[in-house]
Image (cartoon, rainbow, N blue to C red; front, side, top):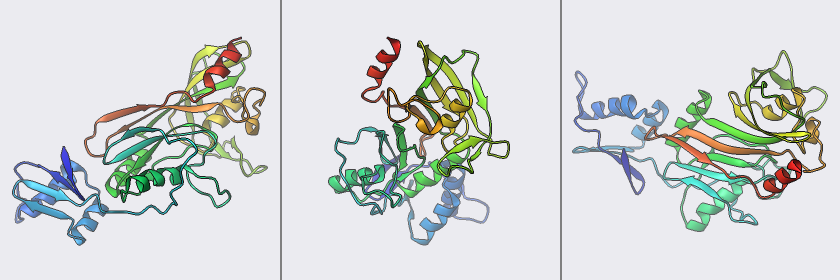
Length: 297
């Protein structure tokens, strides 16, 4: 749909019909809003900074100005796995035990520091912003926007619940195949600041459940989020009588694992520029196959 040329995205909108009483530039602005879906806030900024240029049949937008990350570049012990990347989006694998961004309480590298290190090492002035989060001990794909245009588009898609997230988890007990959906509101637990709980006064929360494999006293399930509340899967599965293996906070046993056995299996979203539906898979973390064999035996 467009081609990057340095700091600019070059587009070929074709013949532009000028609005009544307007000129070709106004026609270009109407095309950007109606066809490209350029967020009005960004359009105003680009206009003010002379970031929209029309030359012949080419329309250029300054979508890739240099940006410096607010996070200190910090290399991880093991190279960060990039699952998808282009000029607009980045999807990386977040290992269990890594926070998405600093919270002022730990000096360990966070995913934000590791992502900043990718571009520092490349010598690229790019400051990606995360679109969603994962708990510290949940592994899986995390989506980043590499420029303001992508961030606004993906944030809006997230708000409309158009970014799909599918997880797999090992849980305690034999999950009934009839358990297909958990629709139970989630609120804060007044007795524990870190916990959430099912509460009639909480926010609506819906998790779809699919039984993949049953063991003697545990199950492997696939979970799809319809909403994205804090600790939603952990709270819902515990509420259903099947806390995640390793999830001591919600009643899970730590016999096999010291943290929740929860992994983001895939992430799906519409590309912010082209609208193409993308699905990014993230293989099981190291150790999960061993855990599965232990449960099978």
